[in-house]
Length: 127
Image (cartoon, rainbow, N blue to C red; front, side, top):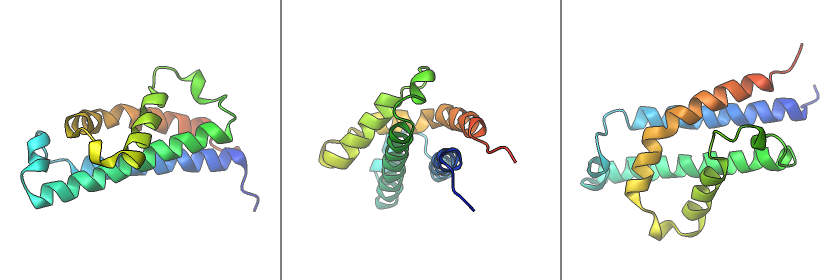
């Protein structure tokens, strides 16, 4: 079976949705940034969530590249550049990550989940 660009993009959005679901599950009992910072287990959860955020940014960048930067621009209500920018900070400046900002991002991932679910449907292959 040929794996089309449409299916590949849909798969990327599904990967993003899965990462967001994992972040939400891991953070369901976290009330504030100190819940991460005050225990080794909290730091483990935080590190895992940061890695998922990095994956989300990398995957969005891949979607943008595969669509020749012509798709995401049609959805300016989502701050795609900020998501990709955060991925760059995580990848290249890990020691300088602001955990307060990461906590804000974690609290807002539901918005991105809704968007990626809708965008995944846009790329649903016709059978």
